[in-house]
Image (tube, rainbow, N blue to C red; front, side, top):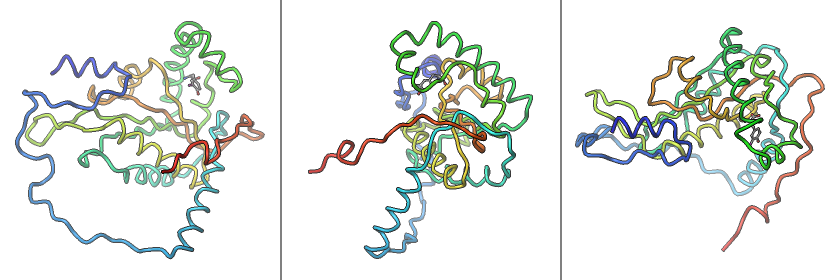
Length: 253
Ligand code: IYR
């Protein structure tokens, strides 16, 4: 099992959902066997309220934009704690909550992270990504220089835990960790936007192991996303993109 876990660490295919193996078998459930089921706390909205609130939430979320130019204006730490608590409300496979949110505000650590990422991204842009990919990205005006990594007051690095350990030291399987962490990250993006902050959903290619080591995270954790969080730089520009209308993203039966 050891070897395949190490392989999964480097595997970006998203197929890292833990498959049970003989060695990992443990007949005691990961959650208490006698787990209580309690009444759902649920308040039903009227139809009118549901239409109104769903539309208001759409209008709010439709204003979210990915931002690549950040101000260094500070953000209250409590806001960061609140948005990460919100991300932690995501559903997860068998309630394994397979996420670790690493929050970086130290200027030295941000500089170290920036150096690791810019070194790799320069190779990515020049060698690994290829002509089609770099041509597709041209309109977005991205490159390997990542000023936002030191300008933004916070960097949030999202690690997925591909497994963890039970109290008895045996391995705990994290079912659907990829999907669980993606959902949690989506909720985090919504929380960032709701709190009046901006972010960039970045995926530093080939930087996972170096950043994991820099931040002292264990080998069961794999970097999935890095989000700078803060306020936009003054006169910040964003590409004039349009979103697909409903009839292009939805099929009804
Ligand atoms: N990770 C690189 C390249 C990049 C890739 C995609 I797909 C984007 O939508 C944007 C950028 C970078 O961060 O520059």
